[in-house]
Structure formats: C-alpha cells, structure tokens
Length: 383
Length: 256
Image (tube, rainbow over all chains, first blue to last red; front, side, top):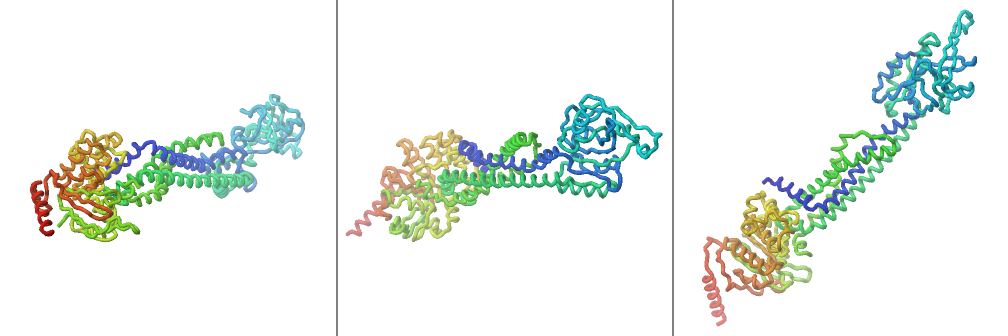
C-alpha cells in the first residue's frame, strides 16, 4: 500500500468514525460557507436585481435629434449597438398638435407595447390600445374633457399647409376608441397616446421621431459608453443619460454592494474564528492520539499534514454543502427582498469550495501548530 | 558492545533527582525488567530509553550511538527505527481498526503493508479481530494489538511500560507468554513494571529507588532462552545458574 493511500484511509476513518465530533466542525464550516456563498451570490446579483428594480422607474437613456430630426431607422441603428440582453425596451415618440372637442392638445404617437417596458410605472385605468383606432388618454385631459374608457373620440389634425392659410385643404379627422386613462401623476397625463401608424394616417406622413426613450439594464459606466458610442456612430442621434435615474442607481448600488461586502468580510472573520475554535477543541481532545503518533515515530510535519488534511477535507465538504445551501439562501433572500429568483452561478461552486478549504486550512494552522508541541511522554502518562 | 548502555545518567528537575547517576547495560536479545516503587524513576528512565526525553547529564548509548545529545527530530527517527513501545493504557487510535493501528507504525516507519500487519496480528492471536475498532476489543486484546504494533517494524528494543497494569490475570498471562515468544525469537525486551511476578519472568531485574539502581538480580525463575549479544549463541537456565553461582563465589571470595 502506498503511503498516500494510508494517509487518506486515516483521514476518511477519522471523519467517518468520529462522525458526531466531525459533524459539529462540518456544520460550523458549512454554515460559514453557506453565508459566504449566499452573500457573494447576492453581491453579484444585486446590480441585476436592483437594475431591474430601477427599470421600473423608467428610461435611463434618451435619444434626441443631433441636428434637426431623426427617424425610426436611426433609432434601430442606435439600439443595435446595445447588447440585446441589456436592452429592456426602446420607445420612440412623435409629438403633433391635434384638436379634440375643438381644443388644441398634444398627441404622442408611440409603440404601445414597448412603452410598457420603458414606462412600467404607468398606471392605466382600462387597457393599453392593442390595435389601430384605439387611443390612450391622459388623466388630465380625461378630466378636462370628461372622457371615459370605452367612449369614442374624434381627433382632428390640421395639416401645415392649411394652417398657413390654404383653405382648400381640409382637417384630417379620425375617430378613436378610448381604451384606457393614463394616470402617472406627471406631465404624461396631459397627452393623448396613439400608435405611430394612426399618427401617420392622421397626419398623412410618416414623420420624424422627436425623442426615443430607452431602458437599459447596465451600470452607469456602461451606459455612458453606450451613449458615446451611439452618438458617435449614428450621426443624427444624440444619446444622453437620464442622470436623475442613473446617478441614484449608481449610488444605491454602490452602497448596497459595500454593505453586502462588509457583511461578507465579517462573516468570513467569524467563520475563521469559529473554525479555529472548533479545530482547537479537536486538537485538545486528541492530544493523546497526537502523543501516541509522535511516540511511534510521527514527525511534526506528519502531524501537521494529517490534521491539515482532515481540516481541509472538512473545508471541502463544508464548501460543497455551502455552495448548495448558499444558493438556496441567496434564492430565498432574492425572492423575499427583490421578489424575483436568481440564476445559479456555476463558477461560484469551485470558488466557494476553494475559499472554504483555504479558510479552514488557515484557521486550523494555529491549533495544528500547537498539536506538534504535544509532549508524548507527558500525554501518554496521562498528566 | 551492549545494545543499550546508560552511563552516569542524571535527570534533574530543580532539586529533584529523578535519575541519580544511573548505570545500566542491556545486551542484545536480553529481557530486562525495571522495577521500583512510584517515584523511583522508572518512567523517567523509560522515557529516556524510549527517546522521548533527554538526560540532564550522562550518556545513553544505543547501538553505540549516544542518543542523549541528539536533536528532537533525530530522536523521533531513532524511536521510529529502533524502538517498539507498549503502554499500560494501550493507546490505540480509537477510530482505526486493529490492523490499521498496526499499519500506523508501518506508515511512519516505511510503507504500510496490510498483509504484514495481518501477520503481526496473527502472531498475537488476533487475526480474526483485525477489523475491529479498539472499543470492540477487550483490554487484553487491545494490549496484544499494541504488542503487534510495537513489533511490526522489527525494532532493536521493545520497551513496555507496565504492560500488564490494566489487565486481568488471564490476559496478563497471554501478554507474558507473548513476551516469552518474542524473547525466544531474539527480541530485546525492557519491561517496566511494579509487579514482581511479571518482573521475575524476565532474565534480569533492575531495581530502582529514588532514582538510583539499588539492585540487579539475575532471575532464578527465568525459563526462556538466553541470548548472548553477539554470535547468537544460546545458553540455558542451567548456564545462568552457573554464572550466578560463579558470581556468588567471587563475592564470597572478596569478602574473605
């Protein structure tokens, strides 16, 4: 039999046949590894989770015309530069002056599907328009004109030529069904919302885009990079960050990550103390065994190797347990705090095991060092 | 040259002389008992011979090498290579089986060999208990595992500290019989005991008191083979008596 085989046979025998003792040590390591793994998972998932939360507060980038105008094609070119998995939504807006009940109001033509992604905080009494011929009315306008969901509303548009005095040109009038009343508490309540194609029908031209709102799940730095890249690549577009959103997002994220990091470091320190205490107890309990091993010829390095092997194997087992339990822990935290699940990070498994092994090994060094100071003559006499 | 020789050995703790100018020789293949009351220095002597302690003064020659000046690391090597230890409290590793406990000594010495460890257990009559943990063995069986562990590396000396101290009469007899067997095979035995019955089955008894050797007795009741240190010539009990008679005659002559 090779020495290495006997070495592992001894370590496994010690772990398996002293199960109750070793379980206590394993438990302390596994708890530490669980909290560590869980916190690291949360640490890395916080930006994603918080990013998703922040996306509820609306767009964090806007496209405006660099010169005078830009088109939907420009928007498409700009958004093509953003990674697909980071782009939560992009909503173009075209504003035109129209009339309802003979009064001038502003109509915003937009994509009714993507607006739900870029402005998830919009509260609709009724429903979003799902097809052409349907309209969303801001709560302010609805109150002024006493409009309700389900009613029909005539919207008229005066072409520019007629406005300039050409009386041969008629107003364009379209009838819309009001599907919902928009309630945001902001300026959005003073607009009508129709689809881009309805606006085209109403005005008679495809027109240009006035503004595009983008919701992107990315860090502040990434957003700045995207903005620069888009502005440089698509000459007609000026991409800008919505500082109000991005700055507060960065601040909150930094503070949250710092908090999680601090807790992780504290847990790491506590785990090390806990493991060191457990290993000290293990060494104290096994003084006679150490004395015997030394008496029958074990060198100090052999004793260190054996005890370190045991503690590192415990660390490995604790790390494996901690990886699994840590994910469950992080998942529960995520579900209860962020109301969403987290994705499993496979790379964290070997890292947790490695850190657990290293932390256990390091924490055990001092007690193991003291093991080599055991005087066999004393302990074997029972003094 | 004697296998072991203690020359003017002292072990001093403050005012206390645990060993006080001890001189003793043990020949190869000899079976020596060390007797004495509590505090006489038996354990101190055992620790020094067993390379677990060093004398304050004097020389301890093992195979002609003075081990009293060796470093702790070298003493570990000497202990591992030349000495087999048997303890009163057995001191088996409680989570290793009998055969694994024997292999442990091989592990530190050279290479573990399960077959050889099984043979050693067989020699002490425990082949069928090889896979048992110490807690599943009786005191006598544990001590026999301890004996198997001590002899597995073919040490120069087997050093037993009160080997029968924790055993009943039946198991004491088994262990003493094992010592006879080992001695007959040529193993050098040093047995520390306070039990006169165990002491007198040895070839020679050294009596300690207050750290001094006060008496050395060639035992009349010794029934085993006598080995001379070199050449392996065996002498019988009868020869020993003759030697003793010669010594007595010499003593009487001196007195005259």
